[in-house]
Length: 409
Ligand SMILES: [Zn+2]
Image 1 (cartoon, rainbow, N blue to C red):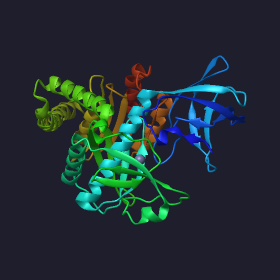
Image 2 (cartoon, helix red, strand yellow):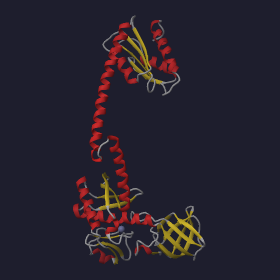
Image 3 (cartoon, rainbow, N blue to C red):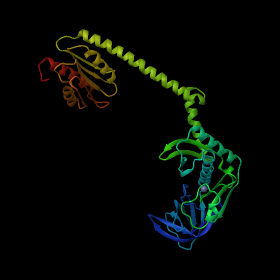
Image 4 (spheres, rainbow, N blue to C red):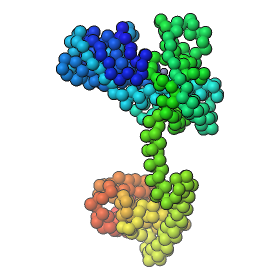
């Protein structure tokens, strides 16, 4: 078994040890030491990184794992001789961050119990934020903020965090917040003075003040409860800084105070919606005018109307097709637009004998696009930036001529 130095001092960043085993392990090498300050991934807390210096070289530790038999494996790129003396150094900034997140989780979980009797069922420490899952039917924002406030009060009170080892039977009498599922030997208890007592093998602060602060980020429903995302300590400062920067940038766009940004966004969205409605109304009126003019110039039976609108989009020619054919009995409209995806719309006054869908398929075959539709209305499109734009107008004309020259329908 490896002597776990971090059990007794979470702020021990350097140590001396001896190599007990060194063996190949999944493309890397696993080193077992007689003692280590490296924390292995367990209990929701992720492993340390750092260096092992031995035999005149420095080797990076890229992973640390906890074995069932009590050994701790340090994953490195090259082997070390068994019996070699090593000097270990862990990445202290990463460790401090983990200590802050993990200890903060103890305080936050205890706050949710004390205030709302919501037990924590799991803890996850990610690269950006941490989450706990609470066993509860619901949790609202006001409750979450209350728990955040209580947790930060406990941090501000700088309560001592004591570690002691207690036999399992004795621990059962102490009313721990959480008992580990399987345990042999003594339990390692983490005691946040007069606030929380729980069993845990992780690394913790000496007093709650070292957590620095807790910032809750979001709450959301998960399978059997609620998930609470949070950050602690320096990570909370970095996250709040990033949030503030984004908010300040948004406020500058609106030339407003940051607290007015939500209202400004709502106003903007309402204006965009109103402008969209007004634009659509204008487009309808424009289509109506075009339709009147085109119908006035049309003749023959059926009245074949063609038009390429290079400066308009598909929405406009669809509107125009509708204005041209609806309420008439003898109109065939063959229209095309050039803005965005070049689009063709073929439409006929309902009840005529022609098949717009089939004609659209033929047209698309010639232009290299895709389309189809019903007998009365069909639509087809070419790729954006198609080189076939010039071919559209003569094609529309040929199709129009086909109606009068008795070609197949
Ligand atoms: Zn812990």
